[in-house]
Amino acid sequence: MKTDQSNSAEVIAVIGATGSGKGVFIKQYALKKSDKRLLIWDYMREYGAFVDVITDKLGVAIQALKAGQFRIAFQPSFDDKIRAQQFDMFCRAAVHAGNLRLVIEELAFVTSATHAPAGWKMATSVGRHKGLRIIGASQRPAQVDKAFWSNCTEIHCGFLNFEADQKVMASSLCVTVDDIKGLKPLQYIHRNVRTKENVMGRVKFS
Image (cartoon, rainbow, N blue to C red):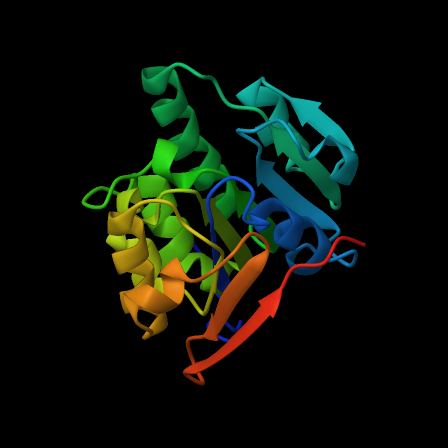
């Protein structure tokens, strides 16, 4: 696998319960109009307006990656075993294609706190050298693999319902659990991991 050491890392975690504004943040702030090579793991089936190709056939999605430019939303299976196999192959294909924006919705359905599929681990750990710019989203951060957290460059957190998730995010953002508990719908804390700076705000609908 040929890599490029000159690329800067960009791995953004977007965390929040239903109604927190997580999806709005991704669509209005994190996705770039300049992204000519966009690949989305669209578990929630809600990114059709942002792409040119929507498919539930993994082979079709992977074949489309051979083009110079592409905007693809792959809709994975709801069957756990099938989805696990699809996710590993999907991530490997993204790493192989390189130079793309990779969006993964609902990480908790394909990883756990103690397990990262090999393809996903490749994407988050060496994807920078292949030009991957990653956005990983989840409603349940306590169920997301630790390898992902260790490679994040930015962390965006909206309100969360479960104490286990609140504790994970308090630790990740270097704030108190009460700070996380105090977030209301559409409010967020956003951390730049490199500068160790936190910004609080509210997601606004365009």
